[in-house]
Image (cartoon, one colour):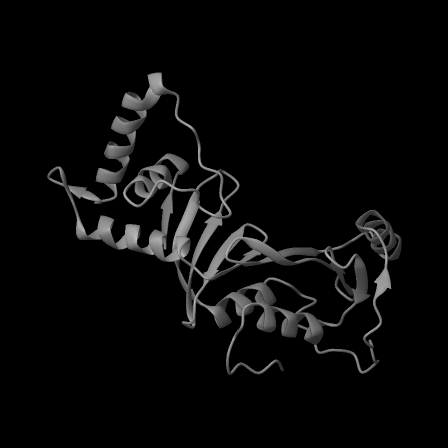
Length: 217
C-alpha cells in the first residue's frame, strides 16, 4: 500500500488514459498552474523513488499497473471511504480516501477487509442473540429510518455505508447503524429497513465482497 495525493494520482492516471477513476474526484489544474504543479508532482514522485535519475522506475510501472487494475475492475464495492475493485481473484485492488485527502492505493485479500471491519466494531465481534430476527423489512424513507434508530439509541458507535456497482452502475446501496447491542440496515434502493444481528451483518459483508470459502462464525 502506498500513500498518494490527488495530484500524484492525476499524474499516474495520465500515464493510462486520463479517464475518470470511479469513486474518487480528481482535481482540475488551471492552465496557468500546470507547470508549477507538474514540477511539484515530479519532485514528490522522485522522493518516493518513482523516478530515479530522471527516468521512470519499476516502482512507478508497478503502481501505475495497480491503478489500471482498479480502473478495469468488473465490479466495485464502496465501504465508507474505501473503494474496492473486484475481478475474479481473491485479492482485490483498493483506493482508500483519508480525511486529509491522502489516497492509499494497494491490494488486499477480500476476507481481510471483513476481518478489519469486524475488528473495529464491538457489535460485530459479538455472538448473535438466540432470538430470531426474521426476514421482515419495514417500508420507510431514509429520514424515517434515521429518526427511528435515533429514538432507539442515541449512542450509535458504528455506521457503515456500502454501495455496490456493476462496472459503474449502482446495484445496491445500504447504510448500517450499530450500537454495542443493536444493529439496523437500511436498503436505499428498496427503501426498507431491518434489524440485524452481528452474524447477519458479518454474512452481509461476506456476501457483498463475494468472499469464497469463509465461514461466518
